[in-house]
Image (tube, rainbow, N blue to C red):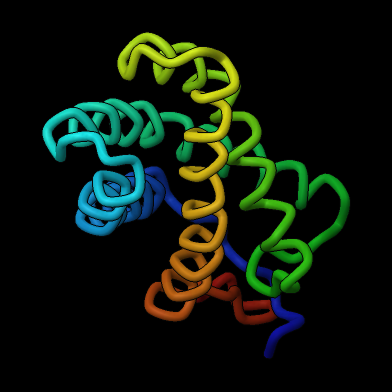
Length: 153
């Protein structure tokens, strides 16, 4: 069964994936980051909500491009190895950090090094969280497979 072709995720599924990812993360990261940094929850809340809204768009676009790259190299969309999932999560965070670092510096009035350490803390959380979330999402909402010679799912 695992060798059957899969149907790529729909736009609606990608939107559900990205929005649920960010909403659940906010419930975890706002209080956690406030405790770790000593910044007020309101300050960290604005920062993380900015990140979340931005990340929804980055998440959708990045994962569409990641899937296209997998397909172009002959990989299965449904059977991702742990190392491939790790690469996906790290690639997402590195790309996103390029965008978030200047905002972190400005919003928290930090120098480059302080903001880099802060963003790396966020990235560490999100790499672990992203790995677990994407694995769970694929289990809860598995890719549909096409039955041979029928075109049916």
